[in-house]
Length: 545
Image (cartoon, rainbow, N blue to C red; front, side, top):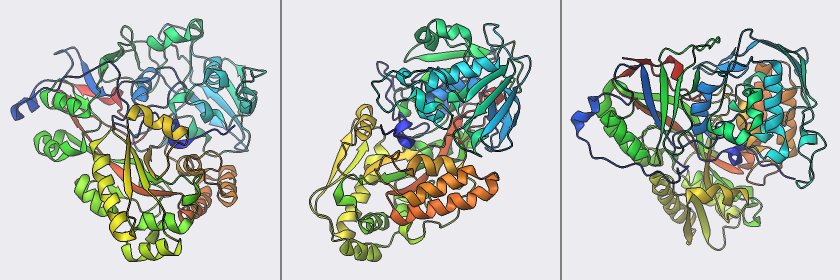
């Protein structure tokens, strides 16, 4: 059984991309005047709450979804054992300490005094029960394979998908006592504390297992916010500050309502009109206007979301590395950035974004640099391309079509490919198509950091047998495994970079650019921080006038 990782675990392409269409909810586009930009925000006047806009979440149970729209809500509902600062540094959240002598066996002590929103105490068993639930193959949770480092994972996920596992508990997760967990991994893994920041690793109360389906509509967490009523599907999720919260993220406001939108343009219109207070991503076509109208309420930030063009190497026509290199070098990344993204995006010069430790400027070198002459030489050396070159992308963003047109023209003019056709697929079908490997040509996709680690990008996107492209490299896999086992994470970076060089050399995927984070706020709120990681908006830090 091949378990696809990386972007296959994403239900849409990067935070705020509105790739996921919220079914059954049509947000009305309202015309507003420039003067409306300073109107009051979405919360009721004086109630201390605020409203943030985003697409509809998928699920609100830890491990069940890999959608950042779900994480927007879940990051307020749950405290993981380990948290991330706005700068991507780890800190103990629900954990009091994490210790390991060999990077394989970890002892975790819980912070005392924590409780769930229903008053149930948070124990080591709360985390163990949640992790077993997410890792159990028959449950088919979206984040299942995030638990693949744990000893006993294979027993919960047999090769024969129709076979029932003989156990429903990870052998590598031991509840020592109410405040102590002992975790044994398959191999030493120095990135384990980073992994635990991912929302799939939140705890579940015993009450959840009475009816997990109902729990998803009204989740009970241990975080700084609790539900106010049930999840109103395709409309909103309302959270209020939890008065019994004993952790380090005490809210500076009284609550946040996450309002669902199926259109990025409509969400931006409502931000301008003051009907919502925070929008994490403003549509690219509206950025210039937003900078002018919002002034200091326009919120730029660095991001780690990387767009790429993947090659279906299971198709023999793309087996030749020189062909893949030629296509990469025929793409004018900087020209597309200026024409489509106002020059705000960062053209790829590495397989790692600038915000990730281990990024090396110009690591990709000439293979990520527009050079039509060298591209044509490589193309001819590869024997050219016969037949129709199909380019795949979803219909989720108009910008995808805009830059794919530029790419198509470049491939025709610079490489001499006469027949280039678009395959624009509905967003609701796109990921299913890629998972089934039905694409017959290069496809647009992206990766958004699960946690800020070179390993998270490299292993999840390029590992043999788990990557979407069908690329296999023992050299790459061995280097990643060696880096994962090293006791010093700093020293491991050098080995991760060696693996990166292998993937660059073979170019099974052409990195394109890193997104620019461009959000905005109303004048009702301040201290708005939107991170580049799964945590997204730090809702608890927002202050409301």
